Image 1 (cartoon, rainbow, N blue to C red):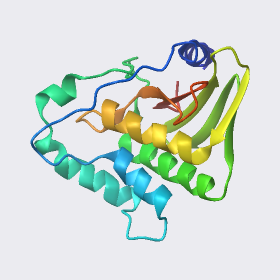
Image 2 (cartoon, rainbow, N blue to C red; image 1 turned 90 degrees about the horizontal axis):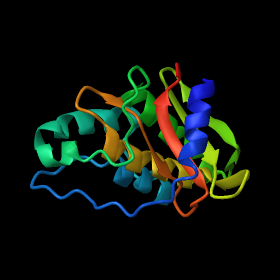
Image 3 (spheres, rainbow, N blue to C red; image 1 turned 60 degrees about the vertical axis):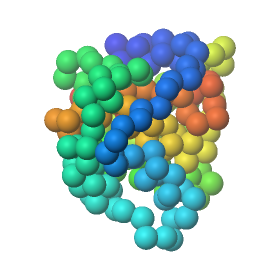
Image 4 (tube, helix red, strand yellow; image 1 turned 180 degrees about the vertical axis):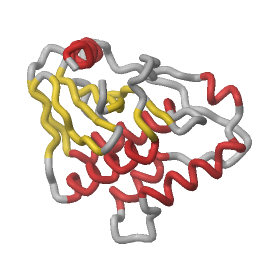
Length: 177
């Protein structure tokens, strides 16, 4: 766990990079679009976390190999991947906190959500030792991580900066790491 926190703290020092978006012919499910719909209109007919995972699974055949090869922001530490359903549960939970106006705060490194095999952590960086964002913005980062880093075997691990906050690195990984 100490290694993980040190690793996360080092990620916070990495500047945010503008990454290209993936384009392909098939309609591939987007976790980022799913969570954005929940944030924008929580009372609309949004997919549940289980339905979102099912939609992602159903869209796997529409994913082109070139999309799967792009792993910017994705980590491959053996044994530190979280399962997709557990990570999706955490993202949905963080969005529900954001709807209530709750802030996700990182004093150096903080666990923002832990659910079964998944943990979403935040790390302050960029010259600050403490930072905060509305939990919606942490959920958005979770959606971006899911879109870039989810593997076909149902596992995910990666990081991105919180939406609109270049001082808060958000990471999805296994709760066992």
